[in-house]
Structures are given as C-alpha cells and as structure tokens.
Length: 131
Image 1 (cartoon, rainbow, N blue to C red):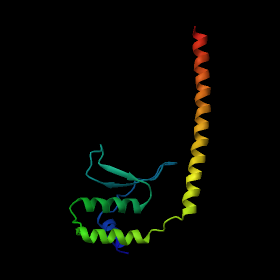
Image 2 (cartoon, rainbow, N blue to C red; image 1 turned 135 degrees about the horizontal axis):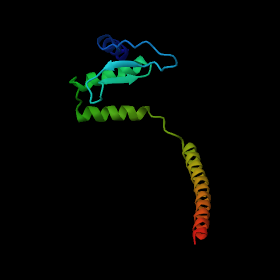
Image 3 (cartoon, one colour; image 1 turned 90 degrees about the vertical axis):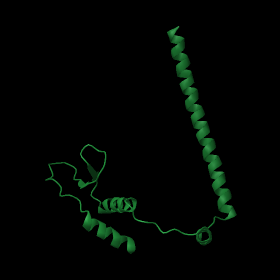
Image 4 (cartoon, one colour; image 1 turned 180 degrees about the vertical axis):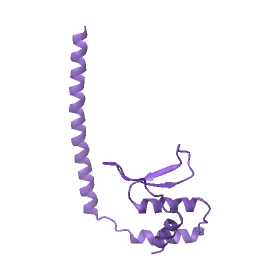
C-alpha cells in the first residue's frame, strides 16, 4: 500500500510529457525528461505508467533519500526469520531434479557431439576439395 501511494505522488510530481499526435501505424511511446547523457535527454518507455513510476522512484532513492540502517544483530534476526519462511524441497524432489539434470545434460552432450561431428566432416570435406 505504501509503494502505490509513493508511486502516485511521484507520478504527480513527474508526469510524462504529452505525446505527439500519432502517425498512421506508428508506435505510441511516452516521454519524460531525465538528466542523462543521451542526445535528446528523453527516455522512452512503452505505455506502462508502472515502468515510469518505478524509474522515478529509483531516481528519487538515488538522489539522496536516506536508507534506514540496521544493526548486524537485527540483520541476522531478519535473515533467520526469512529462512524459516522458505519451503525446502523434500529429498525425493531433490533426487528427481538431480536425475532430470543429468538426463538433460547427457541428451545435450550427445546432440552437440553429433553437431560437432557433422561440422568436422563438412570442414574435412571442404579441405579435401581444396587440395
């Protein structure tokens, strides 16, 4: 909820510029000013206000907004709390995933062996014709 309110405020402060009249079959884009090294100083985004809001939010954070600092002990507590929320795979799921990885790796190795063999024969044939 806090994010969407912040995005709304940022969009009110930094609205996209008005678009030029669309030409036939032209893609419609939104423009907004940004101090950048680009030639025209404009950044272009698709018709997605969320992308513009996200960039404006990122610019706001980078322009000097302070970030709350946590102590190392509090950080460890937060990490432990997040780790408890993780749903770890069962042993069976882990074994099945490992077997699938081995099978797919073997199939891809055989495929690339075949492709390499074909290219080897083509190059050898071309070199034989060149002699």
